[in-house]
Image 1 (cartoon, one colour):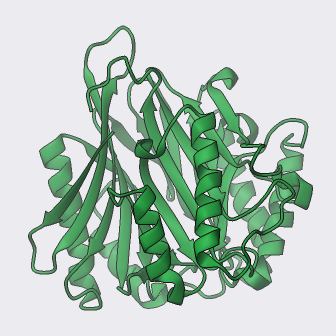
Image 2 (image 1 turned 135 degrees about the vertical axis):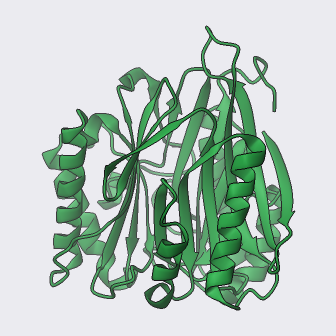
Length: 390
């Protein structure tokens, strides 16, 4: 994978790290196919006019689309004050046909906005519902759902999570899919996670049981992390990714059992990671991963440097299980509880990902003793010695 740092020359310069892999989509075709992930971080006047900062990110996305002959299909925007800034983001991207995930998680270093984006060449994008798009690359039909929230906000996080997942179930069913067979990845962003996370956990566990997901089958790669919606009464946001008609033998659940225990041992129903084996390439979705051992205990309590070390050891174990390495990571998001730990965390992570294909936001993890967590997406050829062009 090629990692490239770019500075887009606008009045408030935006730095992007583009991670690009080019391959042939199938054994019967020689046509080149590109997948790009990118981060976007303002470097000048970071706390200035939010409209200008967002417009600069959009222009950078469009320059990448034009120059690389790709289409953006997913953008997640992290905001320092989602209640006042979300409408600005929606206006800026109103005419772009893509999945636009908006989350209140203060970016670091201190600024009003950071973003990640996913691009692919030769795709068709169509709307499925108000918060889901279909990305069709000619082989796979991928459904990206963003900012599902419960319209009835006068209930607790347990009830909101149930209703979000029921809505998601219906969307999948309407398109010939179900959660157990087709959902690959979920994100739950939880307002005040120390108070509301348990409701999300129980609501998800009950829904999954109804859908045939048990400790004897499998769960779904996921991140459950602090994150705010623009309406303060919304306690949980659901983003999700599903693939239609993907054979079950093409879905590889990742455990890293020598490093971590199964999450069900402490009552949480998600998998540590998943590798989707597409035609000619694979995509690896690593769930929110923290400093944990094989018993589920938190390691290095109070020690940010120690937690970064153990966290990255755990992530590396998942990558190795999928036949990948750190350089295959297309983008990573790092969640930090205490902003005072930013400099240490950034410096330690930069030793492992020197190309800088990660962003850091302030977002407490589900246990107060966890100081840091990271999730990642990696992309690699099925056989890196074959068809490698990046």
